[in-house]
Length: 519
Image (tube, rainbow, N blue to C red; front, side):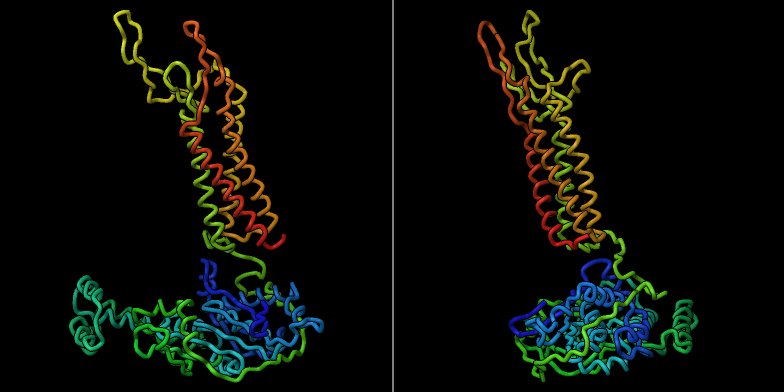
């Protein structure tokens, strides 16, 4: 996008939002940048990065090349040709933005990248130092994510096993004890009550032997070079520290930190909440970071070379392929909401048309409930001396129409519309649930919109039963004529609600169709 207020072209990469994004996060195995460097014009030999983030960066790079986005913005005739290029992102988006900045820098040497609360496993140490010229990473207080790396996971696992070996009280007692907050001044005393000194650990237990075996396996992997390449936070690192500990945005102080300062996980009650992007905005409003800024962007070339991911034998994901993850919401959260509403609409429609209380038949006798496929019966509750019924009530059970009953044209039409509504509703509902797991193109959304509108129409046309021809008869009783009529009952009311819900879902699907990519 183009920010007219600060005169910059900005590429923003969102953070983790779905299960698929989480899978990307967990692919933190170091991956060689040699081939990417050859294509993008930087020295990638001997350098490594986060494999999952690299896959997403390649996808964005290819999309920019395919749509010629930057080439258009920085063409000679563009009013934005002198605007600096800025990349930014939060969490996963920060890691992807950092790699994408490295890939674009040969074409845009003056670009800048701002990585907010970036994961701690992006580039190898040497490459991290080289990116200090154009990447600035921000870490807030005890945030867990910038401290997440393969090395830190291994360290935490070893320390956790060491602590388990030192516990001298029953585990259930320790569990309830740890639930109670403990001030720092009392922490050493409480630890002494539940943990034995390291010198008193029994070395002959089966648990201790397994812990030692685990440490030995890690040591051998390090010697063999399996864990040779450790990844760090890229660029210059600004650590936002809460000086008073009261979590007020006014009390944060920024200072430059070294990437190895984040080589261990800080266990605190704020380790997760410190990753919140919304509060980070308040912090930036209350502090001012001053530094040199460049107003001009120097461009060497706008001719991109697309990186074909299928050429990488070890690549995890194709460039235009998204994996199928249940409820990963690749199209956003709206399809999940629409699918839930559609499921409710289908259930209400099926319930409304299946009972025997769709309409109420009015005549000289008590009101009689009728349905599309069943009806209620009159029951005599009192007889006189001549065995004549003097009191009538409606039965609580529903009875199917007899085989010899000839349904009116309106009833037959209502049954047909109800069946069509169920069929089209199931098809539309299936497409909506698929859209919560997989990317749906505009053409497919258009089909879904048509099915949803038809479902809403068919559901509404079920109400023609209210105008049934049998409801407008004349009855002669003792030379007096009575006109019969019908009114809507519970089933008809539920059908109206179902129709409205289907229409709401159709409107939402039309919006998604407009937002979707053509295809």
